[in-house]
Image 1 (cartoon, rainbow, N blue to C red):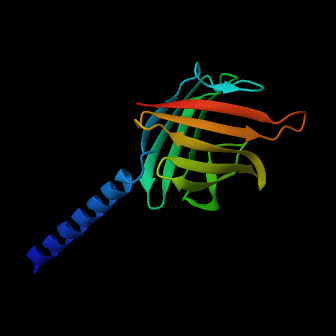
Image 2 (cartoon, one colour; image 1 turned 90 degrees about the vertical axis):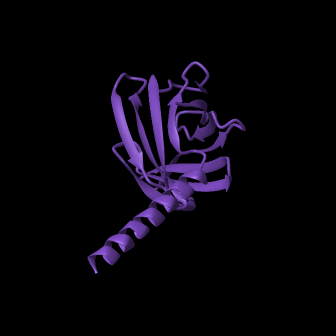
Image 3 (cartoon, rainbow, N blue to C red; image 1 turned 180 degrees about the horizontal axis):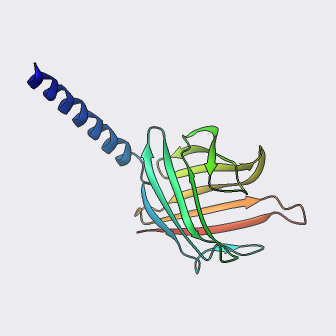
Length: 158
């Protein structure tokens, strides 16, 4: 009896591992990415001095962690686990942002909307290069003091 239970547990574990690997294989955004500040730009203000993005697979989405140093020299750490269904998912670790909604357009393109207290803070598109080594993020943010802020950030796979 114990032998059959052990075999069943091992079989279930094997299926779960294969499922996790299949999810990761289906998501080319999975991995660790570093923003390249020299190749990135913003129309107003300053970009983060450094930023690392770690993306892990989850069913129909991804779990993202961002760590870095912002434009003012302060360390930050944020996390979110959005699915690609367009619904809002909480952002943890930020006082400036509260949720993110994502949609996968195709295998190499994701669109997102970031909100603070239900109000749009930024929106954009992330596109993975054909060689899978670079993500180009193009977005915009409303600006109450003038023209909207536009940005392009370049993320390089580590």
